[in-house]
Amino acid sequence: MPNPSPFRGLSRRTLLQGTAFAALAPAGAKAASPAAETRFRLRAEAVSLRLGTAHQPESPMARLVAVDSPAPGMTVLRAREGEPFVLEIENRLDQPTAFHLRGLRGLNGEDGMPGLTGTPIPAGGTGLIRVPARQSGTFILAPSLASHVAEQNARGLHGALVVEERTRQSFDLDEVLAVADWRLDGEGRLAGDFNSRRDAARVGRLGNRLTANGAPAPGGMVVRPNARLRIRMINTSNARMIPLKVSGFSAEVVAIDSTPCQPFDPLKRTVMLAPSSRIELVLQAPPAAGQTGAIEAKIGEGIPIFTYRTEGAPLPPPSRTASLPDPGLPPAIRLQDAVRAELAITGGAGTQPADAEPAALARLFVDPAQIFRLNDGKVGGFSGKPLASLKRGRVLVLALANRTAWPQVIAVHGHAFRLLHAYDDGWEPYFLDTLYLAPGTIARVALIADNPGRWAIRSTIAEHFAAGVATWFEVT
Image (tube, rainbow, N blue to C red; front, side, top):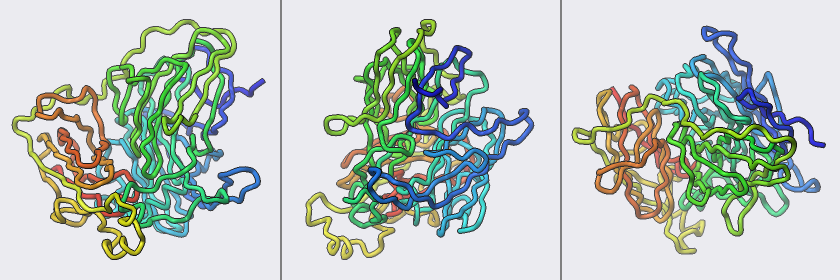
């Protein structure tokens, strides 16, 4: 008989009985009142973990540990919309670090991008991130110091933050499912080839072992028949695009990149997660016991990530899935008077095997921080001039051109954007903040510059970010 699940549902209906095989940290303490300020104390520290079989050696990893509620696996913090909180992060690593809350449209001074906003947390030091919690959603607390991000993220130095809506939603389960990949060597240890030019100049670091919530996949649990599950899926890998397919349970998308959307059925029950992107699904368990469902990565013949099984007495049949609360973003964006800018990405290695030889890469890219160029070197990094400067309230239309042989994944900080159709005659019916660009393609996005400050536009592929795919824009 499985143990009671440590997962917490958000509805009044009886939760499930089951086991969480991929452990999550328990929710953080709630504020005593809306006026109180919750403080989550976190510690970035080195740990040794066995990533392969029981007979294989341990690997040096890194973890963000919730000091007041430590638990194995990836740390997940929970707060509530309208209740401000502070993240206090102590750095016990032997190198500096910094952290960014991916997806949060918060205060510019708390964005955590060294060289643009804030400073690194030195080894032995402590940093603070103050969050007004005006935005509900699913966020990733991820390393953001370009010179160390590839290694720190690959070693597991990330966590998740859930800001719950003011009004409780009618789900029987509300949990994070973080997917990533580890690159293991032949002995089952984490490969130590971080920041290699071969990875940086091509697709980025790809692993060979998929994980669920910081543990080897698959995880699994038991749920009651008719249970409605809110699964907050995030991709914490360095570079891998992860297509995830749901089987056995029905599925609807209710939020993308930390922003609610009108619920819709994903094509073939499959969603694509780019590095640092977030998608929230509502899974509906079948009405009978003894049924199974799964989330699998559509890589090769398919790799199970998480499994579900129905057991026990059925819950009452749920009603139709309702939209999450309106985040207050405008339904339409006026493009006629927009400020327009282009960001063209060039550089990187070619696709031939000889192009990836270490000697050839060393000759071609003397400076590993400039493997890629933006607008032929006219912009790049956070110390030069901005890609665009516009007054608060203006519209920015940004043309993103990938002129490399490899995929690029571009994030805009502090704002959500619409992906425009080819001739600016419409847009996709949801907001994004992270965009996948296939090699040789151009995409246009539009946003309302309503958040003052200096904001990053950069790759969420860790190696590409460190190799030059980063610039900024300014809202005055």
